[in-house]
Length: 118
Image (cartoon, rainbow, N blue to C red):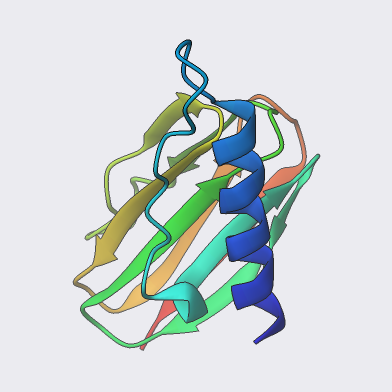
């Protein structure tokens, strides 16, 4: 529940920060699978370990106006494609294979996370 509120708050902040030139505020679609969301704090993935079943879609929420990326360890079979540097976006990846999928934000050395697929 706490994470869901964070995702909604992040979406509202992103929406406010990205107002259109005509004074309107664009619509931000909040992912429905909020329980499988990894958010970014200035230099941390939260949570930094997420356990999901095979076939789950994980949403990576890059909020707060700070650029991040997600670079997976592709030596592990089934790793999803990387997420390039982005700011204030929600990007999803589906995990179709069992395993431990570690990832780094190369923008912030030491910023690491892992999706454990069971």
